[in-house]
Image (tube, rainbow, N blue to C red):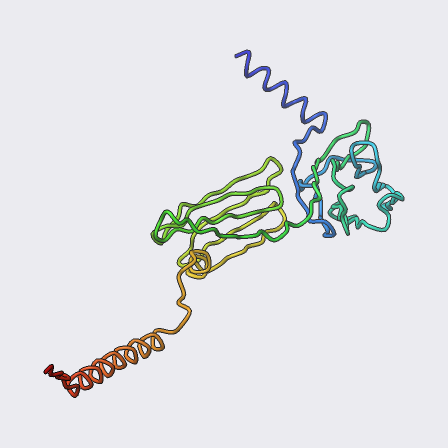
Length: 252
């Protein structure tokens, strides 16, 4: 059919032009990343180059001399394997983010593989906080705060529904209950960090439970003392009342 014919032409064009899909790679700031050729059989070439954003040369390997030329921008921060033709970038910085393409040059240039490298920082530790709800006997309103995302969940009756939010730049914040703990997990493609707290600690710390000013045993002793004093006072009063005699006055 016509559709199959178009697809066949597209595949032939892709093979002849060295078209390759981008491979997304995330790397943490300061770490190293290795970019491989991703094929066992390379076409014959005069030289093979790694380029950034299609214009900036990083390294060029010449097949005839079997020598490599490193360009200044990455000379001290890269390694090139002249057996596998892989490129390793060291001590990556955010400015290293971009497209990296391996190009085999002969009569024409063939793009062997293209990587979209994203250099990002590790996530900061999330902050888990709890506020009690006085309208319910035993609830805990938990808030999980990442650097750019905030979610909340209510813990009630020893359970909670897990919540998860993903930002446009692939940061994930998840709040969940595991056993008697509430877990707040914050992650991105290169790192993750967690904050957790015991549910009992959270609820008792925030529900404002009443604590008497005096221990119960002190109050009990005071009540007994007052009762004894009242009984003794009443007995003394009755005793004095019984010893009193009426005075008789005679009139002549």
